[in-house]
Length: 277
Image (tube, rainbow, N blue to C red):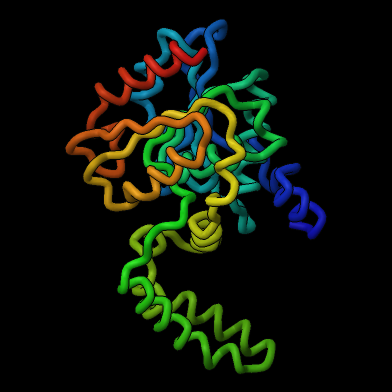
């Protein structure tokens, strides 16, 4: 990506030049005359995991679900892209294939993209409501283990940082591909290779704490009470910071709460959309 296109993407103005929205796999259900809903899956997932939501809403809504870059049937990008670039791709989808403001239903990392868009002046006009299941983006509490792994990572990188170029670049690249480095990463980090590993790091380190207060559309939040990925504190932060937000706690449900308690999720979502239109 050129420096100009990178700057545009960071400002929410352009998708990555080598990756267009036409490369994203799309599925559509429902009548074209009904209100549009866009489904955004989480990291390591795909539109297939959101299919039950699409089927449940199709009687009253035009539902589009997409495979985000490097997921499902959508190819991986050839360059590292982050939240702003993903948002630009979603905007392109809305502009080209929907043509009107949408409700975004997002899970986890899909929720992070949705929160970014709803807080950004360029994307706000595209969004009517947000329905988010355990959205990421709020800074989590860190465990002792996290800080221990970070200390070890810094120790491993220290010798290479002192080396002159190009040895430093080669050394750090070797380290990132070593078994020791992989062992320090999360299961999601270890599950991906190549550019998608760098995309993962850029996505999960993008924080929205200072942005979400700018969201001015109604937001319905869900969290499973057994979710170990997104904490109750993170969800409460969103409820207290977003001007118009409410939280539904799904009992005996984990990070994929919409799957674990589908009936409650769909009933609450339908009620929310009907009463806030």
